[in-house]
Image (cartoon, rainbow, N blue to C red):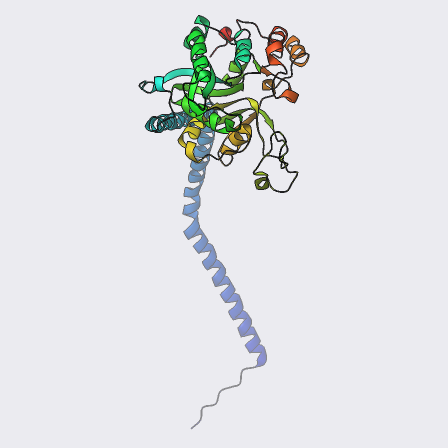
Length: 391
């Protein structure tokens, strides 16, 4: 038996669907509102104090930073000083290592110094490169810018400025040339003797041996090499070097980049010209050989690496090549390459005293024996200048 019901009209179905939709919408709305109130009213109340706390904390930290900006700069300055101190300490350790190695090798330290275990403190060691035939040049230097006798010793003791003529030995040790230097040393006591055979084409060897010997005797901030036909104002030179006293690995001089001369027979011919590229190329920047200065750590570096430092034909090129690849500051100091009068004289009148003067065309003062005194009278700083430099 089948049950039959009254069919539902389409209009009733539409009304029923509409009512269900409205009921569902009302239920969902009330549920969302109750849930929002129940779930989020309490967190909103607790978040506000937290936000206020965070804001206050940020303001507090900002004020602390602003209030201590001076302290931060002070700490930066202290850190910078500590780094400089560390660099100086490393330089000192390198210096001591160089001295230790030098003493273990024969022929690097003058005989009369081998028993001296204590390095002499100095600000600068100035080595005047000279030759057996240059006695008149040496006398012209002694009569002008280089102190003599008791004043030379006093300058070393009071100001830490050491000045010596640098020379090796002849090919026949004990011969007439060596005896002449021995007699001159007995009279003036202003030589630094190297265990080196003198010769013009051995200047690169002499230069590296000079620095190696100097660091084994004196613990100086700077080491200077200067030729015996160059006029020097010691006060201006030392005050110039003093500006760089706190910096390690300093290489100071008049930087140049001359042509590489491949033609045989010409002056300054470079046998290894092919290493510098195509014909007509120039050397890398390096200090001109008349005068230059290096800091103690660079002198120690030369001493440590003495046997493997390559020597080119020109000693100034050799020196510059030894520092390529190192963290070295090159200082192009034009006061160390003034011309002779009227150049240095005009600069002196303007208050720009020259540290060194020479003639480029002669690679020194032309006819220096005759002209050194005139240059000194025109361009000299005065005998008391070096004594007034604050070191």
